[in-house]
Amino acid sequence: ALQNELGQPVIVSTKPSGGGAVGATFVASSEPDGYTILFAAASALIWPPMTQDVTYGPDSFDWIASITEYQQALISKAGAPYTTYKELVAYAKDHPGMNFADQNALSRAFINYIAKKEGIEWTAIPTKGGGEMVPFLLGGKVDVAWSGGVHQRYGDKMQVLASFNATRLAASPDAPSLKEIYGISMPSHAVIVAPAGTPADALKKLETAMQAAGKDKAFDDMVTGKLKFPNAFIGSEALKPIVADMVSGLKTVIEATK
Image (cartoon, rainbow, N blue to C red; front, side, top):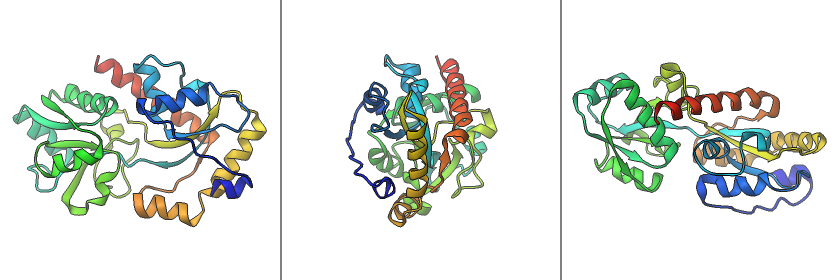
């Protein structure tokens, strides 16, 4: 869709590993000419610089746009002895040693933040992403888990207890967000950025093309139909305070869970 709007090829070069740090490092050090851009989770641009030895930070990029949000949630299997976040906290206090699916350092930090704020004791069970988390949760090996959105494919087999995003999730409006409860949230935006110093005219051209590409039917079907994520474009100016809030929230979580 972006190719169609720009009128030229857009070549995808996958840079896996490091929780996005490999791709972010590559783009941050690329020539800021408007021809090299990065599509990534916003957390990959903020979390590693705060917790790892990397050569980039949020200011290493010109943030062009956000095109969707991961639907991040604290979930449990349907039929658990708690159906709300408050009930989970109360149950966990009476049942020390509960297990949670540990998928990555970022989700672990947030779940440990909850534990520290509420005086809860629970144990991390390492899982290799959502593909392993799902059978662990449905099979009763873990009590709760972080989900980046995969839970939305399992209907009434899973229940959302809280949103890790800054707002409540569209599909689970009754579940509170951590922002409401503790004033913090996990970065949730899927963004496109360029190396810092990219010419303003190139950034504007890319932003305009991205907004138009978001209306492409195949793209919309993928995001809203298959992934069940919102197709919600946010431009560069509106994105700036969101990024600042992400940075502030992560600093709070890191400091509290040292």
